[in-house]
Image (cartoon, rainbow, N blue to C red; front, top):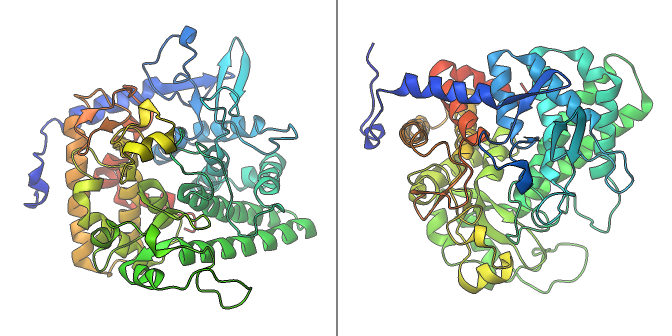
Length: 481
């Protein structure tokens, strides 16, 4: 039966080579898989990478880059590889005093030895916070999909969960429930003025804590423990406080900005504060009014005392939908915002990682004149094909959770996803599955982009699977299914 396309979808010409492109992408993916200790454990970051003499690490297995890989393998039923990956990461969880509980950013087997990087070899020497927070999420998605309750309740998994909770839930000088991190500590791994409580880390923390609760609950069915019950209660309370904090201080709409502009400042005291972080109305950027329109909403990038970051970060907002941090009406407000700002966020290579980019003196001061993060490039307004599957999954999962909610909006979102999928199908093979794209519309391959990037390839394959093979498989990403 011939496929039917709406007028909106036909803005990008469908390719008759779809099956061939998908098959070739699957062949590329199989080549990315590597063995450790004789077993397949995951994918290298990119197929083509410099020689070891250049000390580049694209031939290593990154925990962050393997998130879509593990999801795709779960959908393929290749569960053993996912379990091997989780186990190797668990074996490499740091036990040294300063980084106790941290999972490795990446690892590689060399001459029979397993070598892990916890940030000591990275540019800027920053430990990746997101690697540690992704592990419990992937672990729970694996257990939920496979019903491998024995693995969930095993001593190594439960010890890994407790070590991670010891790391993130501990007394600090910070009184809020967020996790404070330095610049460069997650996917945005070069200076971008994202230090403090960046959205992506806080949403990942929320997903990680929810997953840890489910994993600890699985252990309770095997053996009752008072200490485990106490930790479960503490984690759930932290989870509740974190969500309340993010929805109060990070979620913005046209209405909340109106309130923000008129709030009093310089307030002192403990009770009835309207402006806890002393945000001056002058810091609200002028582009925000048109960006939000009347019915749009999103989670801002950061909340620091007097210095909120109103930039839009695609990954953090998409994950907030997937993890259930945002309510259903808030998710639809986010979808409306993306539709309204489609020219900026989707453009010719969906989708932009951050908007708007920093320019001029701001770029020089806040990125340290980073040549890779020049305006409209890399993380400073660059376009990352690997982000589309996160946002697409959020839309499809919302549709499954709320089947009768705003059919017109969801129809528009599905049509946009279809067009974005065709855009990637037509462009990515010609552009050698590049890591990211430059320019205001994402037309040019990134100046320093790695080609045959694994998460570019797998992100496309995931979108194909969820749009063409089995949309119901989006449920694999529902941590509360």
